[in-house]
Length: 173
Length: 380
Image 1 (cartoon, rainbow over the protein chains, first blue to last red):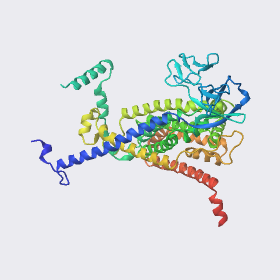
Image 2 (cartoon, helix red, strand yellow; image 1 turned 30 degrees about the vertical axis):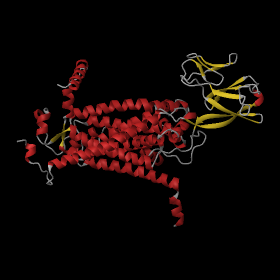
Image 3 (cartoon, rainbow over the protein chains, first blue to last red; image 1 turned 45 degrees about the vertical axis):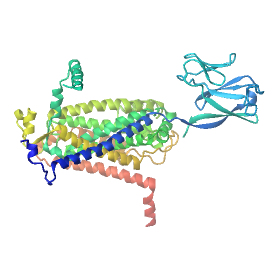
Image 4 (cartoon, helix red, strand yellow; image 1 turned 180 degrees about the horizontal axis):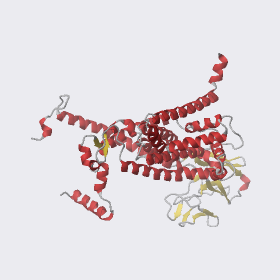
């Protein structure tokens, strides 16, 4: 006879099968705590490793109205870590543009959405071109050619009086 | 044989053919007989600094992801970790408290080894390696404290390196070596950083390997048990059957795990209740009115306040030498006078001096920073 079965009661008089049920419950409890704790810990570790994302917009005065002539463009370097290109179209909207919401100013972050190189503005063809993988964006920042998954990040521009303001994303404190 | 079994076997065979290690060796190592007295937890303190070291290693790697060892950015990067990085304050607090706890556990382990005379022949060299580990950890503490680059840590580095300059002959060379310039600055941070994350971890790991090699090779000191004959001690199975030993795995490993769990709980509590803070940014032109090193240098700091510099440095050197060479000194005293109680008496005296000076400095700091003592006095 199996020696383990000879005495199927433990010191307290409990049945051995009852103890195995208790063992089962204990392991369920342990697993039920340890597994979520481990997963939660891993998720938090991952979030620690990733630096905080850009989370807020800062409104900045960037230049005067007269600094950019109609039809011209201007590069703003290192505005809270971003390189931004601002375009100024003619002050009269084209027939296909809504005159009430027309804003002749447009600005884009020049960081290419593909792999993060800087694109540049080609005024002659009115396109943004990224030299790394020949990506081309139109004057609205939309992808025209090349590998980028999405267009350039648009920066909000507001003109108040003769001053131009931009809303630039930055890391929130 | 089921399919997964066969696959597993094939994978096992693949590695056995290519990695020249025998599993049986590890099984034998895992079964190492541990004397029964090791069932008491205070004999298991040796593993506790190692657990802290593990925590320090992981959190330290995490901190280097954001820390910038450059004077104009060091403080800001620590602030960034504390305030912006997801759970950055927690990682930094864990790092700080694990460092403090490591020194406490090291001291406790040292006291245990000392008062059970476990350093005696043939374990003298291992005691010295252990002292080396303690000094390395103090080196970790000194360099790490300065990296924060707030006022207190900046001036602690300034005073610490200034002290080194007072040592005869090599002092000034040593100071320039540590500073990497004339004052604490760019060069100092670069050097302290590389020592903190590169040199000390390498030295520590090497000494630790030697420490473990020596103590596994010599076996754990038997306390109050009749030594087995050389023949018996060669065979682990005979030892385990004698009933005076239990196997390292799983029994002792389990004890260590329980201790590790307790340490992790204490660390978490300390980090949450007393998170690591940040003082004013370092200002090389303004020495704060009251500066103080970390508590484990209080003892040394008090000596400097009580005695002239040269004497204080000399005293420290003598104390360090006595500590490092104690096993041989103790052996010599035993041979000469045969009074076994001498060693614990010396130990208690040393401990008393250490505690008295540490507490004196701690209270001094408390009075300075909170000025309750003068107010109490003026009220009386």
